[in-house]
Structure formats: structure tokens, C-alpha cells
Image 1 (tube, protein in one colour):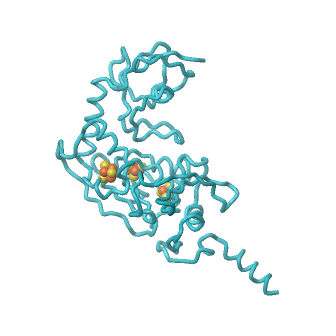
Image 2: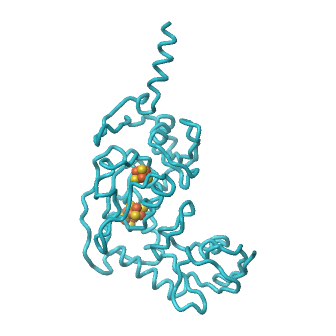
Length: 309
Ligand code: SF4
Ligand code: SF4
Ligand code: SF4
């Protein structure tokens, strides 16, 4: 059944059950989001998407609130803007001022919204975390000082990957996203598939193999299908001046678990001088050969043996 409503003075008609966020998007209104991702279940945790609805007592999270007939919505009213500024001010109070060297600069949602709502670092001061940067594997670097606790990595690992490596630990100011018992990715059952890296809206999770090779706005992007198994997952390939500098899982992908083999296999296929692959032995990563990393050793041996006969 169709529902008619008005958003920022625009008449909108959408199907019953559509959220205000999706209805606004359908007419080109861009409501900010951190935790929303259409490939995952609705979460409603970050509150940056709040909007004002006529006759509602409080602001409502547009990603969770379904539309209703005759609803009148304001997505940028003074109350809404004030609420968003407060959220951003609190986030920046506990965030490293590292945009100059951060890999995410230019595509970081925190940076984008701070600019949009004119919120600066240091408007209020408070305690800051000083987590050690996790750098004990060759693939993913984690800087939890930059984490805004949107939970997207937790949900994608559980709902899309089906691996459930991550969760929220501790409480209040010390709440943190981590594998169980606060171990590192390397010490957990993480397979370094990069799905969490691809959905993180800020620079908390970094693809180490692509770091330092170009700012995101300098890169040309194209989508490729992985050919290393029958599932054909989607990857994004980024190049600078014709040279491929990164391969990353395409969000939302095709809705099935990814593997590290696909990521590094596509690096071998597309990147000019790919870095050596590593495989995990116990909790340690050891450099290996491409056939071994891609599980092609047996096949190559068979081919070599058949040619020797
Ligand atoms: S995560 Fe975003 S806001 Fe934080 S330092 Fe990096 S670019 Fe800046
Ligand atoms: S890299 Fe993949 S398996 Fe590891 S935590 Fe992230 S989503 Fe989960
Ligand atoms: S690491 Fe990134 S995706 Fe995960 S909760 Fe923090 S900000 Fe969100």
C-alpha cells in the first residue's frame, strides 16, 4: 500500500513499511548516518539520523521509524541541527585530531559531517582513550582511538560474514569493539576477509597493503567479480594514474561470507607489484608463495607431474 507524506516541503509517496530515511533518500534528501547499512539489520544506535516529525514529542531516528500517512518531516530543522552538532561535538571530544595523515580522510563520515555542521575538534574537552594501535598482522591495522562505536563491523562480521568474531566489551566510556576477551584479530578466529574494513565509516580499520598509496579522491574505482571460486564475490579495484593500488570487498557485496583468498587473489590479478601473501600458522603470520596462499599448490603439482610423464 502506498503512503503519502511530506519531507522538507516535498510530497513523497512510498510503500508502507518504508523508513523515513529511505523515503527521504528516494527524493534525494541525504540524511547523515553512521550505523545504517542496507545490507544489515536496522540498528538505530548512532542517532545522527534524527529528524523532527510534526506532533512528535521527541526527535526520532529516521533509520528505524516507518513512514505513516500524512506525516510531516523536517530533516534539517534547528532542533535537528542542534542535536546533530551535540552528537558530533561529543564524538570529536574523544577522537584523535589525525585527519592530516588518516587514510580515511576525504571519505570519512565523521570528517564529512563535522564539516557539514561546522563542528570543530576541541569544542569541549574530555577524557580520551589511548589504546595501543593493533598492528600484529600483515593485513589490517586497528586504531580503536578512532572508533565511534557504530557497530557496523560487529554486525557485518556476524550478519553478512556469519563469523561472529567481534562484539562490544566493557561499559560506558570504556566500551570497545573487539574479539572476545579483548584479544587481537590475529589471536582470534578472524579470517581477515576485510568486510569490517570496508564498512567502517571512519579510519579505525585500515587496509595495510593499500596504505600510503593515494588519497581516495585521487583514485579511479571499478567493480570486478572474483574468479577464485564459484560464488563470484564483488570487489572494488582502485587505481591511481593507471596503477592499481587497492582491492577491497565491495559493500554490500553479494551477501555471502568473503575470504582472504579472494582479496589477495584479486591483488595478484590486478595490482602491478602485489605485496607477498601471508598465511596464518597458529597465531603467527608467515610469508608464503602465491600458489600456497591461493590453495592452488595441489593443482599446480598435478599439472607439473602430468607434464613430466
Ligand atoms: S577517522 Fe575521520 S575524523 Fe578521525 S582522524 Fe581519520 S579522517 Fe579525521
Ligand atoms: S576481517 Fe572479516 S572475519 Fe575478521 S573481524 Fe572483520 S569481518 Fe570478521
Ligand atoms: S571499528 Fe569502525 S565499524 Fe567498527 S564500531 Fe568502530 S567505527 Fe564502527
